[in-house]
Length: 542
Image 1 (tube, rainbow, N blue to C red):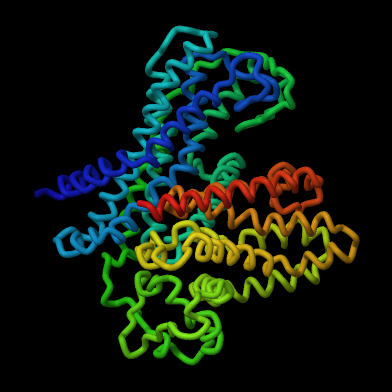
Image 2 (cartoon, rainbow, N blue to C red):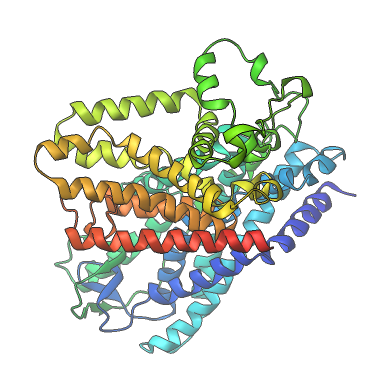
C-alpha cells in the first residue's frame, strides 16, 4: 500500500466516523444559522460588515466574500474545539495501541489526522458556501448568480485557514500539557491575537485583510469622505433600523501575491501537522511514569497526604483509570464498620475535594495563593477588572469534569451503585466546585463588605454556585468537557472580563447589573443544577 493511500484510508475512516457524530450535526446546523445571520436583511437592527455606514450591494462577489470571511472566523474558533479530540479518542478507545503495532509512522499518522480534521471543517464550509448562493437570492438585491465568486473565497480564503487550525489542533493533542482544558484556554487567547495582528498589518494568517482592504478601496472610490472605519462581526444598534449606503464591489483580483500567500499558509499547515509527530508519543505507555503514592518523592508529601489520600473509594478507581498503577500492597480500602459505613455526606464531600485537587499541578496552587493575596492587596479597581475575573477562570480544569467524571474514567457502574448516588455523590461534586470557587475569591468578598457593598458579595456567591451548575448540566448531557469549556470561556470573556452587565454572572465588574441580574442567575443556577441531576439520572438508567 502506497504512502498516500495509507494517509487517505486513515483520514477517510476517521472522517466517516466523525460526521456520524451528533456534535458534527450540531456544529453544522449552528454554522448554517450563523451564515444566515452573517448577511443581514435590509433594515435589520444589526450589521456584520459595516464600513462606516456603508456596505456593498448584495451581489455574488459581496455575499460570497462576506460569508466566507465570517465563516472563516467562526470555524477557526469553534472548529478547533470540534476537531481537537481525534488522537485522544484513539487513545481512549484503545485503537491507538493497534495503530502503534502497525508500520504506520508518526508523521503519516499525524498527517492522516490532519487530513481528517481538514475534511470535516471543509465539508461544513462547503455547505455554508452553497447556502450563501441561496442567501443572495433571499436578500434579492442582485439575483444574478456567479458561481466563481463563491468558489474563489472558499478555496483561497477558507481552506487555508481551516487547514492551519486543523494542524494546530493536532499539535495541541500531541503535547501533553496542552491536550486538556488548559490547551482549550490557551487557544482561546491565541485566536484573537491572530485576528488583531492581521488587521494591524501582521501576517495574513486568515487572509481576511485581503478582502477588507479591497472593499475599503471600493468604498472610498464611491464615497470619498470614507475614513477607513470598519465594524467586523455582530454589531447591534439598540433596536433601531440600520440603512447603510451601498456601493458596487466586484471582488478582489486573483493576483499572484494573493494566490501564493494563501497557498503558502496551506503548505505551512501541512508542515505543522508533520512537526506535530515530534512530541507525539505513538501511544507509548512503557516510558510513562507510573508511581504509587508511596513511591512519590518526599517533596510536597504532606500536601499529597492531605489532598490525595482516601479519594479513590469515591471515584471507584478513577485515578487508576486515568493512568496510575496501584499494587495490592498499597491499596487502603475504606472500612465498612462504624459510622463510615453509612456514607456520611461530609466524608463524601471531603473525598471529592481531594479527588479534584490532587490532579492539579504545583503551579496551580501557587497561582491560587497569588490570586487570593492580590485580591487583598490590589486597589479595588484592579480587583474588579482583572484579579477576580482571572480567579473565576483559574479553576476551570476542576469545574469542567464535574458532569462526566465517572464516564471519562469508566467508573459509573461502581459510583452509581452506591447508596443515593444522585443525592450524595452528585451534590458533593457540585459543592466541590462551589467551595473551590469561593476559596478563589475569598480575598475580594470581605473587602466589598467593608466598603458597604453587600450586593456584590451576594452576586459573587451566586456566581460561585452558577459556574459548577453550568459545568454539571453541560457535562452530564454532552458527556464531554469541551462544551462547558467553550461556552464558559465565551461567557467569562464577554461577562466578567469585558464587563457586559447581562453576562457578568458574578457581579464582579463596575458595570455589573443590579439585584435583578443576581436573581436571574439564582434561577439559572437552580435550573442548570436540575438539568445536571436529570442528565446524571439519564446516565444512571442507560
